[in-house]
Structure formats: C-alpha cells, structure tokens
Image 1 (tube, rainbow, N blue to C red):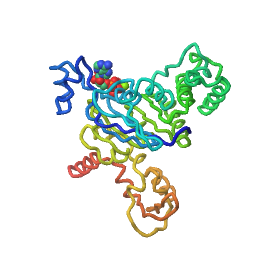
Image 2 (image 1 turned 60 degrees about the vertical axis):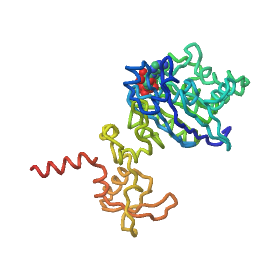
Image 3 (image 1 turned 135 degrees about the horizontal axis):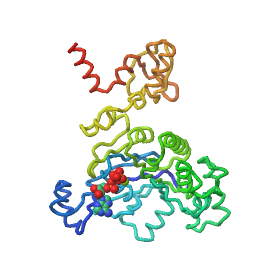
Image 4 (image 1 turned 180 degrees about the vertical axis):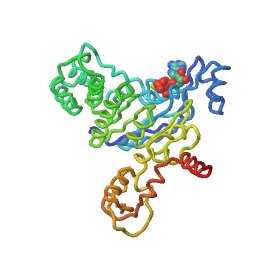
Length: 357
Ligand SMILES: Nc1ncnc2c1ncn2[C@@H]1O[C@H](COP(=O)(O)OP(=O)(O)OP(=O)(O)O)[C@@H](O)[C@H]1O
Ligand SMILES: [Mg+2]
C-alpha cells in the first residue's frame, strides 16, 4: 500500500443548511433544537458537535435512520460538503492534515489519491465496459494504459468478475455491478474507502456475499473504511466501531458489543432489541476467571453462539477460553451463554410471566 494506515478524526463538526449558517452556528452550539432552527429560523441542522475517532485500518460504521445525517457526515470526509464549523483530520505518516483547510488543489489531490468512494446506486458509466469503469480513476490520474489495465484486472479478479471485463453494466446483475463499483474503488489504491449505503440496494443474499467480499479484502488490505448503513446486522457484522446518529448528533459510539450490551438510551435499545446477541457477544466478554475445566477450548474472540454450538455438540457444560496465542484466560458455561443470549427486556418479561402464572 502507498501509505501506512490512516486514521480519521472528526472534531466538533457542525453543519447547518440554509441561507446564513454562520449566523446560527452559535445558537446550534448552545443547543437550540433542530426543530426551532428549522421552524423559526429556516435552517436545517445537518450535524451537531460530531466527534469521532475512526480506527486506522479498521471499519467505522455510521448508522441511523433516514435523515439522521449519515450522508452529510461521510461527505465531509472528502469535503463534498463544507462544514459550518469543525475539523476533519487525516492522520498518516506521522502528520495530521485538516481536510477543511485544504486548498482547492490539495483537496483534488487528496480526493483522487487518498480516498475512493462506493455509491449506493453503483454510479457506473453505462457506455464503458467493466474494465474501463474499473480503471476510470487511474485514467484520470494519467496512469499509463498497460499499468492501469494490470491494476484494474487484478481487482476485477479479486471481486470475482474475471471473464466479465468486456461486458457493459446493463449486462450485469445488481450484485455484479456493485462488484465493479468496488473494483473501481480499490484500483486507485487509496487508503480511505468511503461507502455510503453501498450494499443497501442489493438482495439479502447478494448483500451478505458482498459483506464477505469486503471483509476478506479488508483482512489483507487494512484500509480505513467508513461504511454507512441503516441495517444493524450489517453494522454489527462489518463494524470495528459503530457510531449511531440521530437528528445530526452522535447518540452512542463503541464496538457492536458495547452498543448491544449497554445501549445508551431507549432510542438505541429499540435499535438493538431484536438483534441476535449470540452472534455479537464474544467469549472474552462473558468468561469468568478460573482454572481449566474438562471441556472444549474456544478462542476468546469467538462469538458465543459458536461456543454454544460446540458445547452442545459435545454435550458439555463448560469451555476453556484461550487467547489467540493459546493462553488459558478463563472458563465459560452453557448457562451463562444462554442467559446472555436473552435480551434484558425479554428476561424481565419472562420473569414477570413466570410470576403471573
Ligand atoms: N443540501 C441540503 N440542503 C438542506 N438540507 C439538507 C441538505 N442535505 C441534507 N439536508 C438535511 O440534512 C439532514 C440529514 O440528511 P442526510 O442526507 O445526511 O441523511 P441520511 O442519514 O443520509 O438519510 P438517508 O438514510 O435517507 O440517506 C436531513 O434533515 C436533510 O433533509
Ligand atoms: Mg444518506
């Protein structure tokens, strides 16, 4: 890769849409409600006081309902939108650059060389072939023909489209078109990948395939990915870190586990209540300290659903939890796993039902 893992730091970012955003910035900073800003002052509060440290070489997911500000936020990272206030700091190679302060030329270079975007509606050129679409970014950068062919073909293969390089987008299914979108984004070797609802237009099975493709590639590439979705399962599967937006504000951020286990408020609870907790909670979180027991060994990073499967297939009650290096860390029992898989509300409901009967 061209540069070491890049981290993105968003600091005190505000965005007001309307005729005189600067005039209402102070009011927004002092907490005037989105409704008052809109109804009384004719301004839309897009983002308020966003502070996120996006993990270098990891996947930052931003989720929230429609209109919560997800697209507005991701578009600040390559400054397709100018903020009303705040910083977007890019840390790489020991230096920090503020995207907000870049000159026009710096910004164009930054966009071309250090970021790539994958769009919800694929945004492929219909009159260009798969190969021509994939190498488009390199062509703009005047990379010689042979070199850009080679680079793009490599990514076309990696996303599973070998043999389709001469096809046109309308000859491909939606899932295949988005593979082209991904190949195009990967071809310019940018350290930052911005994905705004990139898989939302796909059927569930194809969507899950694309998530796998992305995770596989990410294992090897270690890019800094900002991935927007309004789907919690997708967020939990992909996100090393998740930020949840509501009305332009971050309501909670943390790992998927942290959010599922400790939702910050009712809004987040309602988001996470139906999630399959067994696929989110990891053995490390649930284990108790203690000497090794007679039972199977599970990796601390394994999700508890898998541990439960292992225990039940061997008809055993407890497992030994070990680090990735094989060091004994503690033990985990089947009853702890079952208790953790039931969300707190249901547990309460079950107790109340039991009491009532
Ligand atoms: N150019 C604009 N002018 C005025 N208001 C805007 C503009 N762009 C976005 N908004 C407003 O900012 C808020 C956030 O919009 P945004 O598009 O970021 O939401 P989103 O979370 O991406 O929603 P979706 O899931 O529907 O894509 C909304 O209230 C929207 O109406
Ligand atoms: Mg959007």
